[in-house]
Length: 310
Image 1: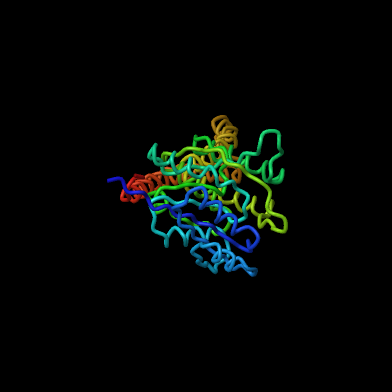
Image 2: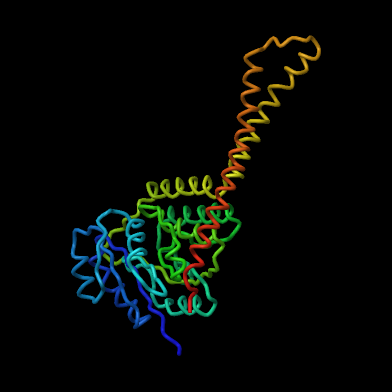
């Protein structure tokens, strides 16, 4: 007998009184059987009341930040398919059935909603956000050798085994980057589906801060490079140090061969120190690469402990 999956929508909200009711209604129109969870993140307006009146299950996460909300929701909610969507009514929820169908029919773990403006219309998000998003797409895609079109999208559909194996560490808007990297790091099956994107409703204020959040995401990417590509990083550092040691050391060796003297002792000491540091950097890279492989194996086994999408 075919049993319909339990589909849960997670809607993080902070002061979204104006928009949240419409988001809930749109989700239910798109997928009538969906269970909507609104996670209030310390709102000071009527978000909680509006969400409850619209029929959502309202829960709260007092620690401020979208990452904290997602981590809490992923831990608390039990479902077969999870939908993550912002509560600001900027995403068109009508492609949701297609996203869920794509996930189920292809046994995927992650379907990314790629924000797409109508033909001929300008993007609904600021130019700085668009430029930053493209830059991060290129950077993260290059690091993990896997393309991504809109890694900062807040509209995603995920399987249970994806959610329950996701080690959420981010606190704020870096959570989208962390979700994308989790897919790439474990090489999980995924797809992208275009979704409509529009301006916020009148009177609704964006919580994004272009430079502040951009620097936080860039810092996260730097940390991910250190954690996910340690051999590449430390081997590069080691190679530069060893090259500098060779450049400094060749004249000293030539002079020693010719005269039997080492007149520039500080330079010799510096060259040796750089060479030793370069070797140690390579050794650190190999050790951390082994740790990375062990960590990925553990993550993979934890991921496989959960059932695949029906």
